[in-house]
Image (cartoon, rainbow, N blue to C red):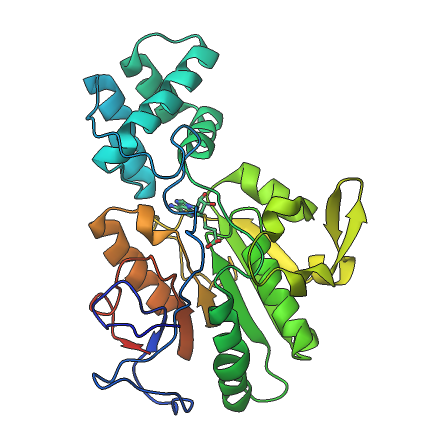
Length: 319
Ligand SMILES: C[S@@+](CC[C@H](N)C(=O)[O-])C[C@H]1O[C@@H](n2cnc3c(N)ncnc32)[C@H](O)[C@@H]1O
């Protein structure tokens, strides 16, 4: 654990200001809270892409204006932005898909992704980072167990459902970790867990709920093993947990939530971790605002230790 600064990248638990008593927690001198895990090993998630292994620092800019136009179009639709040190790997990914589609001119490919939803989805799969694993940042799950869930239980009437959302869930490990935690705390029957992502391929894997050892690599993964059964050389999540989590497609950058019809509203708990880090600053701001609107009064938003600071972007109370 380490101390976090309110404006720095370390804080990870935030909630709307307003009524509702804060749980007891240790405050630092600046009034900010101790929470985020200090990892023993580097976390490969935020920096690794399919084409550029962790640690790669090539600095180049787009080699073709058409490729830049493809990235700009993707950014307009999804909020994804490609820092200079990610552009080379993004280019490789775009060129790979162009070859597969038999297209040589990046401008023609730009037209394709604008008009063909399947090609657009393929590009998203290629250029998003889907790294995740069970109980990633275990200190956050411990904070949820110790502070957040008891606070939600106190605030909610016993007959009220506890609503939790993994926003940008990738292949589902985060949403299932939440469901396991709720089960461990005896809250499974009165809770709902939603997982959403922009990648339909990732959502298909999430619904399958079959995982390899890579999904269990974190320090906190041991507790997930109780809920997994061997399936060949992989592991299948027990059905009781699998069916408690609902997975839906959602582009966080679009103005489609909060939404009663989509069931994305009144959340007691949102985990949006290692997603905002890939967005441009305007998208971070608008998504932070929408996540805020999607919380129930007194609800909690948990960001990752590597995510951009959200405190000034909506009236959150950072802890
Ligand atoms: C690194 S994973 C994070 C998974 C999980 N939250 C975690 O922390 O382990 C980032 C996920 O964000 C998703 N994503 C990227 N842009 C998105 C968008 N505009 N809307 C929804 N999901 C998005 C990607 O598809 C990917 O699955």
